Image (cartoon, rainbow, N blue to C red; front, side, top):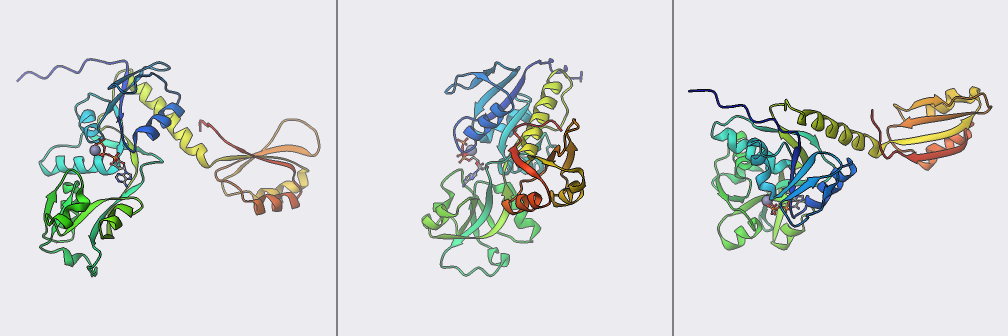
Amino acid sequence: MSPSPAAPARDRLRIAIQKKGRLADPARALLTACGLSWRESRDKLFCFGESLPVDLLLVRDDDIPGLIADGVCDLGIVGFNELDEQAKARRQIGMSDAYQSLRALPFGDCRLMLGIPEEWEWSGVDMLQGKRIATSYPAILTAWLAERGIKADVVELSGSVEIAPKLGTADLIADLVSSGATLRANQLKPVEILMESTAVLAGPVDELTDSRAGLMAMLLRRLDGINASREQKLVMFSAADEALPSIGSLLPAGAELIRLPGTAQPARLQAMCPSGLSWQQLEEIERAGASQLMVLAVEKSLA
Ligand code: ATP
Ligand code: ZN
């Protein structure tokens, strides 16, 4: 057999995001914060990148892992739950891994949980032997049950999983939960966490080799900068040199104290702190000899 021809080099990066749903707006907001902009075509499938050669494909979240696996898209923003479900399903039929989570993102938090009828008393996973469990995450549930040596029927449903016990198609469910309100509305209660999930930036297992690799590295660096700066605060103040040791000991761990150039006394100083400071901490720093204290939020940082 002749080797398959190498995929043609592409010079634009393509990111798949959810078209409509919980992850659609936060995914766009995050990519916008990374400095990307597009020729707006919100209702269409494709958005052409203007500020950088980075285009968007707007799709159903279920399609995102496959689009990365097939090389149609280079990156995707998808729930870890969906990514892991499809990865496990591939492994169960002997396929190799084709995508991976590159970064966890600060939205889309949820848990995949077992929900049982309210009237049941939960006595542990052995209760699940022989039961029928409805879920949209059959591969995750199957692996979870197997790890615990439980033999149960996994009933795969693509939606409205929470009404399965009422309809009699299952005894209990495994479904995504954030507040638990949907479970309660269906007379179910959450009892076991199968997985904690957030949205992730997913990418291929194999590294890109053409000019998209540079674009991807730049995007990741900007994302990391956004993540790092979320908690970071820049503290500025004036203080005499002899007060610096005690002020330094009051700053959060990891804070880097820098004396700004100039000979004025008291000297002007700044400290980049990895976390915020409470009012009490600021007052202690003031008592230790700092004046003109100012705490600034860090919008962007390239570490
Ligand atoms: P699509 O039409 O794209 O298939 P969907 O109905 O599968 O949409 P959403 O309900 O928008 O998807 O959920 C997308 C993702 O949001 C989930 O896969 C999960 O990662 C995350 N999420 C966060 N909280 C919840 C929740 N309470 N219920 C469901 N998903 C949640
Ligand atoms: Zn979906």
